[in-house]
Length: 142
Image (tube, rainbow, N blue to C red; front, side, top):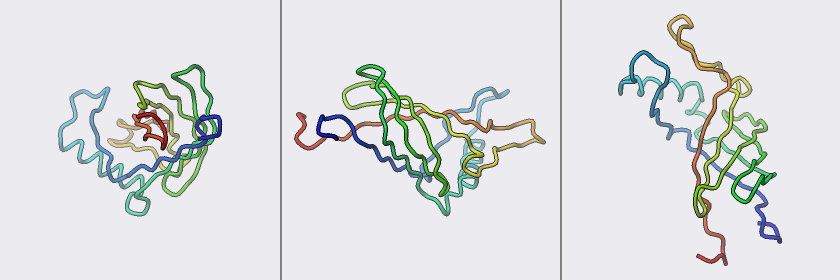
């Protein structure tokens, strides 16, 4: 926190071994448990999780559009490669936030996934959503 009680920086570490496939959209049939396991294994390989078990996001600039929402600019390090990233956020409860953003896979040296001779493919730009809870600050009312 800055002296004026505004946020100065955020650092988040993401355990890349913890990814879970919850759903797939646009397919002819729902994903099976075997499909989810195969997708998760492929994602771990594409993300080089054996060498880069953590990703990191460091935010250094905040833009509030109102009291409960805004954007934050920072750097995402994925597979050992750092690139600028902007997150949009909204406060969903006391100390709780939902963020959204887009990661362009090729910017991190990731070739977008394809299968079945290109009939199945993942876009290069992947949208994501996250939820976070801010830890209590020392001296803050609790």
